[in-house]
Length: 482
Length: 136
Image 1 (tube, rainbow over the protein chains, first blue to last red):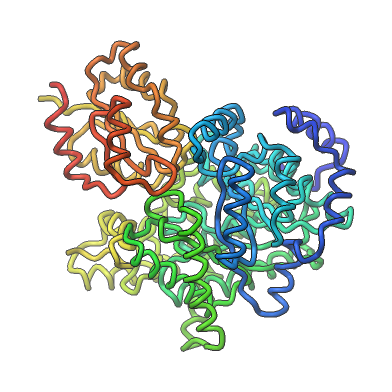
Image 2 (cartoon, each protein chain N blue to C red):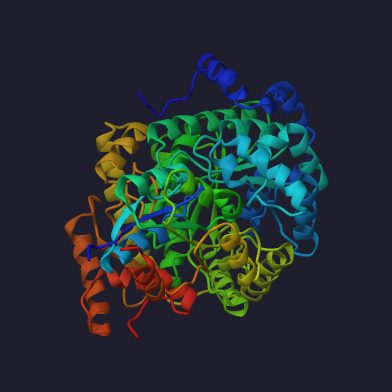
């Protein structure tokens, strides 16, 4: 029976034996050696320290996404982002085969990439490169470095990359399953992520603080803030229970600046409320904002505008970190030059807006209250279904459609919720599916959509949803009829 | 004429699900019988579904850059399984990195695909090609 309870060491060790034999490189992982190696990493290269400093100093750190198949090429890419792109934090984005634990296919991808003289994988296959290959990467760069992926079972990946000196690990049992997999049962992915969190807890207990970052944007497509907030808070609670102390919760830009600022403000406040209510006080909470995660315009100049708009929101909402997109977003994996351009465009706007404060605090406060009300509707039901246990409640809630991520591929997600923008571009609920939103909130969503329907002279319909999904790549936020 | 059956899916280890859901709703609306296999579909799952449903076309999507690796050999496997004349369409972000579309199209046509589409393909146009090219 799944429970939100710290994994016992005897159980952890018996699972661990299996985890480390899933691929030959697992045998190189020895915890004592890993702790020694991590302790020797200077504080300036520790991700958790960097996030805490940003919080204390009110800074926004910039981080790109990047990863290619081969170690040397990956180092060249990261160094370019560090020097030319002036990234504050570095990523190592993992390829899609590794994310599904298909290490043999990743191995073929490495061979083919060597033969082709170019990366045929969409990321860095860290498990195949093993501890020595990963350490070569960590040692070649001077900024803190994080593993970014989308892996439902990331236990071996966590073992290898943390032993290799990575100091932050993205993901979670819900956010790296429901939007990233098709047939992985939620109980299984939550259990496997409890293991990853316990591993991070072990490092913590040995004096090494590793940052953990649940993946906020989920499908990156019209996800209303209250849905992603509820899931982020649950993943935070699950991580804290396993001994994680540095947590960065995420949110993906939705498009209306007021809703986005309210979302970042409410995420921080809600997370503290729920963490404290669960009895946690010894933790560091920071917030990451993702520039637009939906479809991008193909035209690079237009793509820069989308990047810029996200940067404006960040400058006003003040997260500790922003994840930066590139002008090649619509075309797939960017070149390293394009990746550095995304960083520069973002830096320019954030620097320009550093000292500005935004309009109308009251409207933001109202939107904050709405989001908090919605999250409370969901969290109350999750805890009720789990009889107080958030892990068991999450599984039951997904089964019942009480938690439901729009457009997610997983068969364990109900997929009944349909979001749509209102007349000002705020994300609202078109079809609520089984979300336990109360009548007051639902009536309010409905009235917002009626405003849009009237303005566009058409009924509220699924066509609006499709129009909204493609709107940004066509230059608009709201998908209006032609 | 009966509504033609098409098999739809995202190939390989790719879990991009948004476009897949839109394609399903769109092609159903255009009168096709859509068998949607969803995301992370292997070559043999595409072929088995096409045989089971007597489909006239397989529409392969790939967004994550591994399309080149994932699609190799699909045409040969179709022929091996007796699907000699099945239409193969492919679309999305098919290779790693920004590559001129002509090169991508040529590469995938050599691999045996009948039509190759960029990520911003006009769906009405795709539906028109399909209507014209499916064997009755």
